[in-house]
Length: 295
Image 1: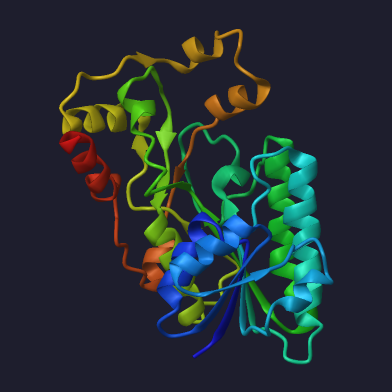
Image 2: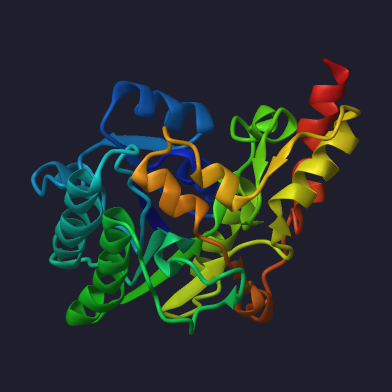
């Protein structure tokens, strides 16, 4: 039985805690009352602390494994740097300076660090090309996660997530109603986003980076049509990248997102032996489709 601290125990962290609680001592760390209530409802211990505040982290018990899954709450690059870079440094220095220091760190990142690859395949060996200030921050945080624990004799792994979906994040109207812009979707269900981290920890896999994505990147138009047919509704309207970019109200950040296309490979995670609960969107969206049809 290992002791696990999940820093920033939100959407994925709560599921990770639920998966780990049967065989390990798990503590989830949040700043708010609502966050602590959610941890309690998930069935494991919650502690109030802030990753950017070294003193507050003293309330968190010693851990063998630390998972850094804190979020900047969708705010800008400055806040992202404070949380993902400075907060990560603070957490690493705090826990690894203890007499009973952790063995492992897993930092949850994003495939946004790849930038645009024109629909080509990317994997863990693909050079990063972040194209926004926020994804540049994420790339810097990845370096901190890989390098800083080694200064203390520990090990850091980056779990690089594709687009998360699952309960409360299916967003069916977005694709059923349209219009749907062309490009690829790279997705992973929350169960597997958490399950992959559990797998990496329990199996003591020591890769520096593991891409966490399901088996089948899918074109957005094909996904939207599949979803519409499964739900028994008309196929949604489509638009090309150029048509979407012609929208005068489109922000600079949204334009970069529209212009970014890639297919993410999970070969490494598969080769390590991870078995997906939801290997494709068809399995992952089944519950959402059944709910939509029955309403």
